[in-house]
Structures are given as C-alpha cells and as structure tokens.
Length: 200
Image 1 (cartoon, rainbow, N blue to C red):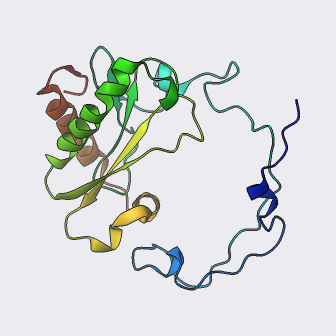
Image 2 (cartoon, rainbow, N blue to C red; image 1 turned 135 degrees about the vertical axis):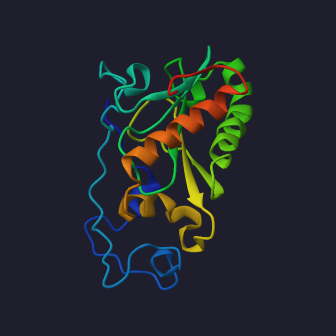
C-alpha cells in the first residue's frame, strides 16, 4: 500500500536551502553553538516509514536492556541508566516492562505514569546541585515507550530549556567513578519508595 505525503509535507521546501530565521532557536542564549550555521536541506519524505527498533521482528532494546544498565525496577516499571557518562550530572530513562508505545499502555500503567514521572524526578532532585529535571519523550528510534530525564545543574542558566540534550552532547563527560556513584544514588532513592535497586 502506497502512502502519499500529507498536504503539510507537500508545502515544505524539500530539496531547497532554507534561510536561518531571525530570532529563532539558534539566536537563543541557551543554544550551545555559535558562528556560521546553515539549515540542512530537507530530504524527500520516506513513506511508509521504516520500522523502529522493536517493530517488524527487530530486537527491542527496551525489552532486553542492551543499551544501558537497569538501575531500579518493580513489577511494572524500570529505570535504566547509561553505562557511559554523559555531559549532564544525571540522565536516565523510565520504561514499562510491557512492550508497546504510549498509546498501547494498559489503563493501569497509564494511570501510574504521572506518579512514576514524579518519582524519578524526585530521585534526580535528591542529588546534590540539581536545579531542574527535564523530561522528554520522542520515540522515533524505538517502539518501546520510554521517557528521558536530564538533570540540569544548579546555576547553569545557559543550559535551561529545550537545548539541554544538545548541551549534554558537547559538555565534558562526567568522570566515570562519579557517574557510577550517581547511578547508585538514583537507584537507592527510587528504592526508598519500593521496588528493587539493582545498583548498590
């Protein structure tokens, strides 16, 4: 079955050079890059879209936990860390054990989601020197529902807002020993409200 581009996509300047808008994100004080920037030329749409990880027989990293250590879990949820240090003080993911996307969550899991978001945020906020926790959901790479948590260090106002994941890529990485201790502290903080800490 063929899929045609939507009217919205048909209006996009595909294949053309787009001008950098004045006052857009690249001009925000929180944008991590400066100097001469060019917007990439838009590629033609790929329709139907290729399967994400976990679809059409692809192994699901969310089910088998191949992309990072499980820090904490209970009967229905798990919090996965990152084995390699990142450029922010802490970064984790929340995932349900059951495979599926956000729209596929069982009603019981959907009802628990708000409380779980709060719980993971509390665990990251319990670390020293954290001002805010940014919570993001994209889902374009994997079909297993997952939510990202990025901890913003206190006082670093230039790291506020939507560009924090970009800053995480370019900032110096946290020392490995400190990163492991942070993961341990997150796991222990989560376990104070139940479940099992897997990093002790």
